Length: 139
Figure (cartoon, rainbow, N blue to C red):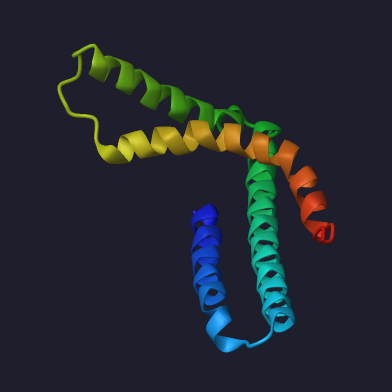
């Protein structure tokens, strides 16, 4: 979702950049305006990625807290839920279910399994992304 926002911001900035030639008369002014708009695009992307990182860290913290919980139910409800939906999907494809698998069931399984994978991936990649965004643009 956030990558869509970044892409949409990029489209808007590209449209503005396309009109720069009509707004500014000198090559130096055009380049200055282009540089400022590109810096704005990078700043927006940085803010969105940092917000996404913070959200992923909060989600990972919740999962970690649950995994370290005192009761079996607190530690196990997410994995049990995901395994249950996985079994339902397998039974569905084997033709052994009396009810259809709904889109919501697929989405829940994708979110549940993807959430673990994505949160670990973001945890590992985010520091490198944040460092590269903090560096001033070349040129």
